[in-house]
Length: 634
Image (cartoon, rainbow, N blue to C red; front, side, top):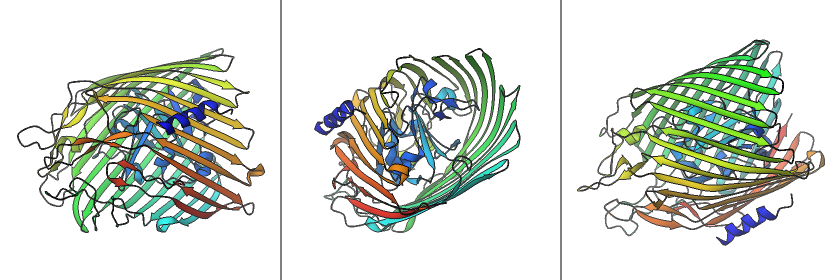
């Protein structure tokens, strides 16, 4: 708590704009609307944070999950082979994740593993918090995270980097992008390798990881009112992991132990094609798109296959927006339709589980209205989903904001969300330890938020605070019914509640200094008990300086993760007990210097204080580490 207090005090006392967090007036965003027309961030009544490409570069982000720690309301839990994020106290599978507009969650697991997402050159992130199912359907209870790569027109040229450092690490990335006539393109390749460190208390086995990603993005404009875009992405991650010791009578029962030959291999293949047509002098926008996601995950013990799963998602969408303006007042009305089919199966190599395909079909219809009248903005959306497996659902969303001449902005939002049970919850099976429940009902959530922002010093400084309050019904939890006490999921009869306060400070001092800070207080309870892996206090502070003419710079990032609880299986009955994980503060120092106009050297130190900490019970994390490399830009 002392470190949390110091971080919060530092935020309050700073005399001087997060990487566009709750961004400048003209910041354009694409998350938070179903219209083909991007929105201005300042007109949103909900809470949206943008991490721009400059911040990604200055902080030398290699794993996207690392920089998500700097966003209000986000909690990150990472172990080798699995990284989860939670928004505003919700579960990891309550977060909808998009990459360039493609839904990328694993249909089998019901969530996205952020350990598989390596940061590309020239990329940014938009995080929209609060219930968003009225726009996106199932999964968006906590909010939406969208990872966006730049187009060839936005960031043309060739860039490449290579680096090495602690723990046998070698990372490399290259990007070629450009535009010619009515066509632009961008091709990105990324490779991150590390030998890793021990992931177990008193362990000696280093856990390595290799991530490969390739992405393609292109836009063709055959006519002034027609645009066709295409996105393709492939990722492959091989990550060592350690198992927990569940040998009866063992002194390390329930703890993570060295497990030679244990690793997980995950692969994702994603694609999207989208065509947009504009009529009535641009006031009528129509778009049709098709996307596909194909995932597979295989686990190995003693170098032999031990488990696996397969998932696919095929989705088609149509969106039509009519804009009708009168003077300074702008109105838009949108209709959207989504048709989606998810398929999944267990690839269990032991033959003890059903390995056939199962399918879920869903059709969603969306109506959205937006109004901008001077300093006032209003948005509302209503969606109805027809599902062949689960009960049909109707969700809603509304938000409003008003900006005063004094630089004060008031904003309010509310909505509802739904999350359908995943395949593993429905049909998963682990002999003697877990059995799925095919009778599960979807989880449902409602919530609201209200906040204020204030710009000072000629808009160079922005401070803000938002209060949020949510209630979750039918939460899926793990039950241990007598007499066998085998774990099985069930829906709770009681409500789960999440409330808290998110604060931020962003400052820009000329072109040289950037100061970014955030603090979140969270109170999350499930059946009256504190939710695990959700710290009450999370804070982040980043201070960056750039030399004139961008000849180099230094960025220091301090991230505080408060005390949290976790579940530990320390009893042979496999009924969990609650344990406490201590708070920790991570300090990173990043720097670069230009050698020539096209070449620069860079380096960074991670966990500079050599803090020993656990994000998940008995899974240890790396100590201090240093890296250095070279970047070329043409």
